[in-house]
Length: 319
Ligand SMILES: NC(=O)c1ccc[n+]([C@@H]2O[C@H](COP(=O)([O-])OP(=O)(O)OC[C@H]3O[C@@H](n4cnc5c(N)ncnc54)[C@H](OP(=O)(O)O)[C@@H]3O)[C@@H](O)[C@H]2O)c1
Image (cartoon, rainbow, N blue to C red; front, side):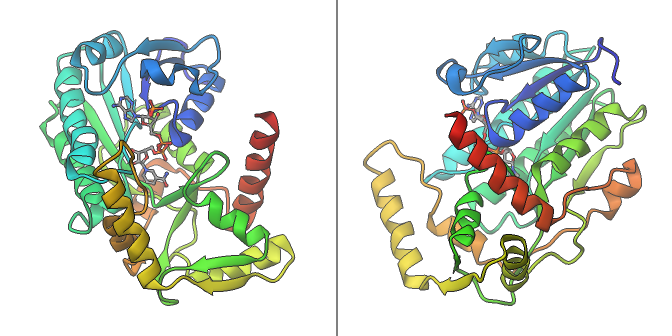
């Protein structure tokens, strides 16, 4: 159990991953403070013990208040969809630079954890990938009293996720859209395993610094055929893979860009996102982080798929 005196400031608490981090920190007895945009206050209910600072990553005054008195920052906020380079750059790189600058001036603040992304390993692919790498590079300017860690998760899934959940729901209905060649491979991680990695680092007396990849323990990642086979055995039904023609995805992506130029809309599917989706090898290696911290992932894809579907169904009923 962590000392109640440890005060952790968390960004992105209204999001999929950040909400999980906050929930576990509270359960583990940390004192938790979150930065929430005023317009997002109603998005999630937080335990009474969580201190809420209204603010925005683009508002340095609110960041200053947010970090005053905290000894650790877990920076999980980020932009994952958008149609302009500036949208990603502003939040995923610039805001990290700003946070590093402010955190460096706080003598009590000793640890800074950034939720980066495996995408940062291929910054040439898209503005998102480049902006996540930019965030990591911003940490290089931190002074020595601030131990900085960037975690690079691959695709994260679990209850509340919006990106992979449509695929899993389609699988539960008996079909799986396929958008990339069969030989492509990718790693995955269940959200609670990412959260446990964060907690493991926070709780370690001598924290490691640097950039670390994480996955669910399945070395070498998965192909879509392997995912399909696991899903068929978990869901106990045949799942038909349906190839989505490249021209259709390209067309939707172009249409989204056109729409985003005339109405306020942050699309997920863009030509850049397609470059990411078609990248052949989103495979990572978690041995360095596991070796440095003794962290171990617990949720295999077969267990995680059931948990994700059950959790989403529960959330749906609660709404
Ligand atoms: N999900 C994945 O598969 C995955 C994989 C690798 C890395 N990551 C990284 O993990 C992080 C969290 O991802 P997620 O899936 O949890 O995303 P998410 O559900 O979209 O959550 C994003 C969070 O960032 C906050 N945020 C965005 N702009 C902000 C601003 N200007 N000021 C304050 N807060 C702001 C959002 O607040 P509002 O509620 O106010 O919008 C929200 O809490 C991101 O940095 C992402 O790059 C995610």
